[in-house]
Image (cartoon, rainbow, N blue to C red; front, side):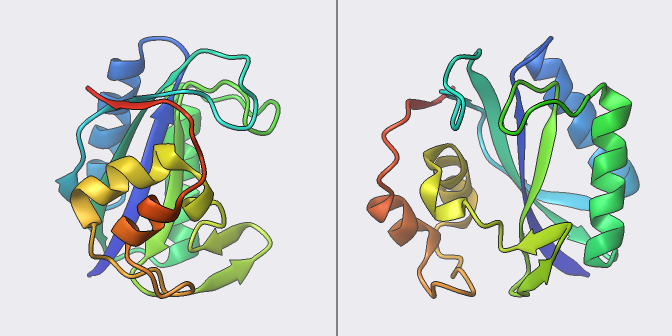
Length: 159
């Protein structure tokens, strides 16, 4: 079983319900959730003129290979009602693979570690809560160090 770190986010509809649905489907279709962060209300990143997000980081144990996991996560997003529109736009649910254990994956459809981890406070805050000592396989810095060095000043509040 492989440890995989995910970030869930939502800013449309009933955000709490969207996260609960996603978590239940992840457990059903992808693997056992072994850790979950608190919920965080976060300012939109990339395109600021939209509603704030609810974000949560989780660690799952999965037997799925990276591309199979991505396929399952995309199916969960679609099943909950996600419609792809503009990059970084509003969404009912978004599930990102942050880390797939210590693997480095560079495919057109999947980049792991997630390329924006160190630039996004909304990712680092919840991730730091559950994996402060995890070492990023490319930068070789802990999550807590990446958070200390993060230049993003977006509003991120633990609920």
